[in-house]
Image (cartoon, rainbow, N blue to C red; front, side, top):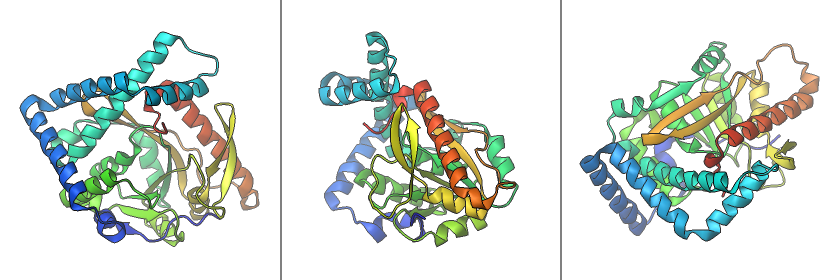
Length: 317
């Protein structure tokens, strides 16, 4: 079993307990945040969104290497081939989306709560609510496509008790923003964040507390030989995806869903919860390996379908 979980901390503890940001990093991000908030105050969020699209277009024009990497990824997603015109349109949309997501992420905590709530569209929420009624917790299988790191905050603001399993190595901007979020949103400070290289006892506790637990299993590389993986076929390739959190969820009798986050124009966000991949009851525990293999392949197929529908949401570039 993968050692995934442990060391549960509140969101507000991320920076001080694991890594302290230097004064220059804080000054740099603070200056950027001030400018973005000034721009949004002067020209509205729509104006900030248009600024982000403009900045993303400039990045598209000058970042040749990133464009080339993205073109390679599109060839994997569409092995049958796509037109050059569509390829350019998708790539430009990717640059614009990622830039706008970063701008919104940096000033999210400065926005009035009601303005944030008006920008959330939750598709398939009934699937999550029905799963929580069973009282054994819900495991949401996320992926590294789109701004999945904001999903926990949005879910918490909607009233759900959440937990997330993440890698211990976080970027500076993520640590900085998480500190700001924890000071502004009590719901974010209440999220249980579990490190992926510790013991799983706290994941068990989260499921017993009937929380919504999320993690992304589609890793680009496995960081330890002791981590349990399962082979899947995705985009006509053989990949190894992590299975630790899924194993814990099955042992706890949790319902398993697959979820995605889609960024829409003008900083609207679409949360998507698909019908359950697994509902406890009726499975022979001696066949757990077969259940995991089936669920992981369905998870991979769900990612493939989602990415082909939203190719500009690829994040591993």
